Each structure stands twice: as structure tokens, then as C-alpha cells.
Image 1 (cartoon, rainbow, N blue to C red):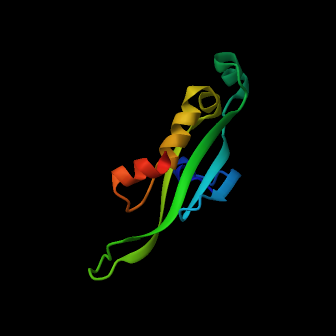
Image 2: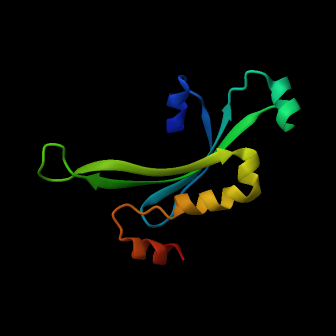
Length: 119
């Protein structure tokens, strides 16, 4: 499954699903890893000490409903929340924070209930 931002890059980058599991509350919680194109690996290594750029992503996906564009009954929709950053930032302090942010996503649930269910 490709990460939605890969379309913004003008090509279809491949994302590896590194973990995916239902959470028991009707959501699929997943992690992705995407290698990003690097124009000049030698220059990247000189500037940042790495030769590859990898984006790590955490997400939560659920089947929800949204208002019908024509009015009337709501229609089914796959609803997702994503959080990501470069792997070296993920492995530092950002990874747990972004994972928690994606995991806190609850569609159609009042905010107080979402906070209570994540604790």
C-alpha cells in the first residue's frame, strides 16, 4: 500500500507495511516504511551522515460514515489518520509522539471518550 503523500512526489513510491493489526475497537493500526528518492547520496552523506532517506509512518484506519453529497443518509467511508517523519527523527524523540498521535485517532467518537479509551 502506498502512502498518500507518495502521489505528491509525482511517482508511485512503494511503502513497506512493517506492522498491521486490528486494535479490537474496529480500527486497523499500522506502520509503514518508505525509502525516498535521493538525487545525490554522496552529498547527502557529506551533509547529514546518511546515504538514504527513509520515511516512517504510523496510521490508524477505520470504516466510518460521512454525509452524502446529495443529502440524505450517510455513506460508508474509509477514514484514516497518518503521522510520519524521517527515520532518524522517528528513532529519536518524534517516533513515540507521532505514533501516539496517530493512535489517538477515533472517528465519530467525542474527544473525551477518545482520550479515555487510549489510556
